[in-house]
Image (cartoon, rainbow, N blue to C red):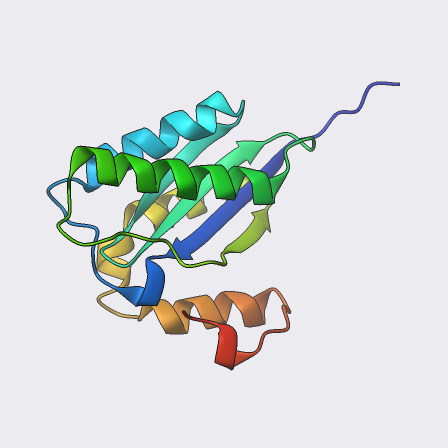
Length: 149
């Protein structure tokens, strides 16, 4: 029997220790590179954007994708890209964890718009407050002690 599915996921993670290291002069190159990593894994990127200390990725993916492996590949390969391109004079690392949140197809335009407007959104709400709000809205149990590294 054939399985049919379509998943819409928003993946959110930040720079280690919440450092503001993603510079506007090279963030577009980083986002293009991450888009290619996701495409190579057979998934479709719908939106990507962020701030100097974190990013949001919205994808359409199959039920066969292993999300932890995808996020690991995105983080590892984008870190290597940043290093190879010599965008920074300091060591770059992503935080160890991440958030992943699911949506229905009818939410797609709203989420894409939200991600495209990250800079404006974060003039009103901090990343920390936003992320905790996601966790509460999705009824995800968390320990504040380990939330941001």
